[in-house]
Image (cartoon, rainbow, N blue to C red; front, side):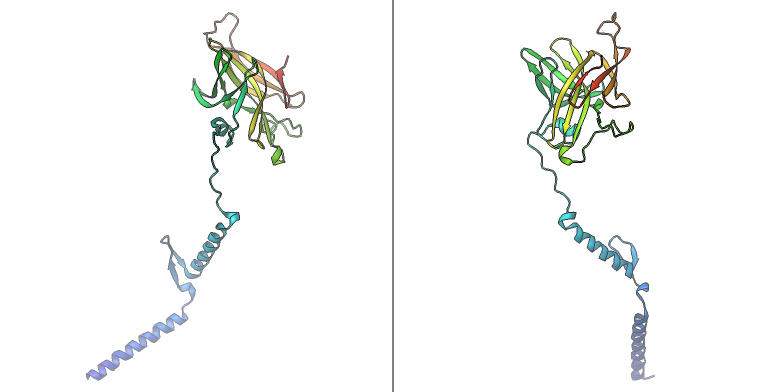
Length: 264
């Protein structure tokens, strides 16, 4: 076979191959085409195109103002550590407790752990008397004065429908110490105002000296006159203050949206 014939045969085979590939490509549908995705997975062509389009739309939506990720909340100068931890409020308004004797207000500034219990704490000086106030924040008990709520929900925080009128009245036990050996427990009534990011101490009732508070619960049905029951451990009259309190007692308190008093 001459060289010319060989070249002619080779050229013919090449042309036929090109035609075959073109015919196959022309007849091949998108179902026969697959794409390798960025994550290494393989998807059918139409599905891959649909996914890319959906991702593009989603990215565009996220760049619009209504879907934009909010910027980090700017810190408030001199923000209260206690208000931030207890109520997630970024505010300089402090958690103030009024001393039951004299009514002077002092600020809870930080936290301290005593016998496995963490308290919110602040130091005070009233005249020549110095001491500390420790709030047992784990026993904060919200009060709901809305009679429309049933007993299963009435111990939850009463949040108004109006965002400008959101408040949470609650009770919490706290300790007042002095320079001596006195460790006096009180139950305080407070009101948290979310619209102003502020808190007011409305009143207190003394529970006892060197006691151990076990529980604070609304007395059901929780309706006027509203009552709460405080269960604590005290000592018998013959026991010394240094002994561990073991006598279980329960006392009822009467509360309203503005006052707290003993139930006697």
